[in-house]
Length: 251
Ligand code: SF4
Figure: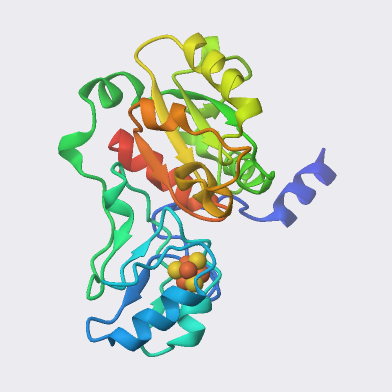
C-alpha cells in the first residue's frame, strides 16, 4: 500500500487546475490578430496563398470556421498577421468566427442568443454523443483527450455517452460526407428534446478543405440550429471545453 501511495505521489498533479487560464506552448495557434493598417497588397498576397480560402480578398478578415491554422499568412506578413495563444475562440454564431483587421478583443459568445433551456437544464450535466461524419480522426482524438485525466471535462458533468438516447446533444466532426448523412440524421432524431448541436473543427464548421468535394453533403448543417462552433484543425481540448463552459455559463 505504501508503495502505491509513493507511486501516486511521484506522479504529481496531473489535471489542469484552471481550464480558463492554463498556459499553452508559444507555438500554439489561437485567435489571430490582423493589424488595422494591413495593406491591400498584403491582403491580396495572403488571400492567394491561404489553402482554405479563409482570408477575404477585399477586407482581409480571417474566417476561423475555414482557417486550418497553418500560419502561412503570418509567415508571409509577419508584422501584420499574428496568432495569439488565446484558445478561447468558440462562437455561437457563424459570423462570430470572423476576425476583422484591428480586432483585438477576445472572442465571446453572444449571451442573448443562448437558448434559455440550455443553461437551465444542462448546466450541471451535459451528456453528448459524438458523430464522426467523414472525420479524419484528428478532432475525434482531441475530443477524447477532453475527457482524460489532464483536461477532465467530466468535473463539470460534461461527458460523451455511447447512445444518442442517453445524450443531450451531438458533437459533429468531419465535413459531413454523403454516406454519413443518414446516420447523422438518425442519431440526431434519437436524441430526446431539448437538445443541442456542437460543430467541432474546421471541417464540421465549413467543410474545410473538402468543401467542394462531391462526397460531401451538408444539408443537415444548413437545416438545424447550431448552438456552438468550436474552431481548430483539429480543435484543442481547451478550446472545446471552454466553448461548452461559455455555452453553459460556467465560470
Ligand atoms: S493560418 Fe488560416 S488564414 Fe492563415 S493561411 Fe493558414 S488557413 Fe489561411
